[in-house]
Length: 220
Image (cartoon, rainbow, N blue to C red; front, side):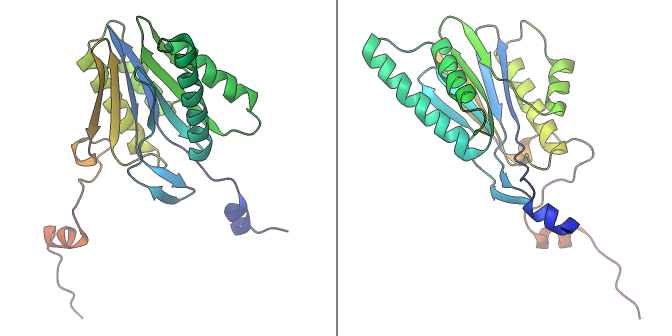
């Protein structure tokens, strides 16, 4: 009979992450955290989970990094061939349908969730898959007719709230804004994110933490 410790070691790894997509008047904002974890081990604390498919279409990746990167590579290749054959850029709808086709055709083998966002005179979000805390923030603060600044602030607030509650999410927040003027990438370091639930302020090192407090000397 397997012990409780063996079950924990041999059990499936938690691959939680936070990705989000929000539309506003004239564009779309995609956001993601940067922590890549394997169980309780953080393999990469500054990964980029927002992948470019075309000049005007981007993909947020979650779940298995290998699966989502493979899907995005295939879709990018097919979209490139599509552009050559038709002589014009692929639409957001074409990119989303390709991701859907590959994902659902291999759903028994893939462990990934994705969001596709882009701009080509119409807006589209597909496969929105976010933690509950992120969705609660969207329901509470999101509304129709937002400006670009309001949408970006909402994305950063939602991802930072998910980071505060989800141990598998963390690091920095990256956003991509897509509209008629092009694509804008933004980076929000951890020390600039809003704090939730009385979190401790980040410290540079253990020495800084020790020097910030003056413990009482030990008396025998």
